[in-house]
Image (cartoon, rainbow, N blue to C red; front, side, top):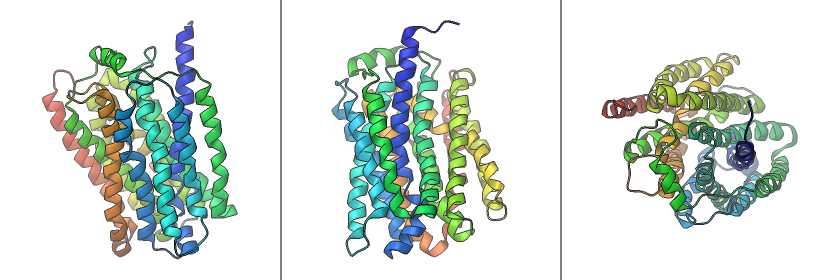
Length: 395
């Protein structure tokens, strides 16, 4: 089969964009897995370091809301390139010199890096909207899951580097930022402007239901909170409370990311056939018992990490599909506003939840809090089931 030049060109641009997204989100994922070594180096409580990690996640998401509205009429991808370079300053957080103001410095760097990451998401989703030669369910899933893969891969990179070379070695990871920026800048990518996107929203390329934005946002926020709890607490739980090595603890969460990446692409491609809402429903319905089973087995057997990868394959597709549905949601909000809210606002809520759970973990331990993940999946099942009943003709 002959592939048209426009399809090849958009595919190359999509790959450059997803690579930039992967690199940027890697910088968000490198801190949580090394909380315990940071505690030992800086003499700071685990709860305080969880707040720092959540501050990075919060800023990288909540800033997406204003960013998504500021540039609806500009087509250059240069802000995305700048965002990747700025996101990379997070590598300095675990390598600051110990001292009285180290926590203040960490917080400042977290806000700065978060701003860089925040630039990428609404701008990147706007770029995704311009790939009119590629299936939107697949392009959105690839873009969103590439970020999560970077986020999860950051866990493996940071834990392995720290275990072997120390926290200061994480500064080496900054080298990926200029490479990603150069690839994207040289791809010829142009972002569609607001009036172009309005035309494409009016004629969705696939059978996508017009779900009201409000319940869709709640679903996305619930799934994001599940992922945030898992990303922040699981590596430290496996290392500190279950007794595994630092590198294995980070690798375990990366396996979840690998499974999630493959699953999101597979289910994203199949969603137009099976129904987007139904895929979200059944993935969350299967994810709840699989997560519970993993949490029971994890302290007893290293091989349980294989189950974690399978769980990622099943469950992670829900959030990218929420993004896809938000593109054509029934709402008075403009496209850029919806993208800023569903991508940034949902993860901002997840970060706020972690601010609460950080101090709680000092009293309960991390293990009990991880069970909130499968409870969140059950909440998603309930929300999705209600919406399917309302959308029955087109779900």
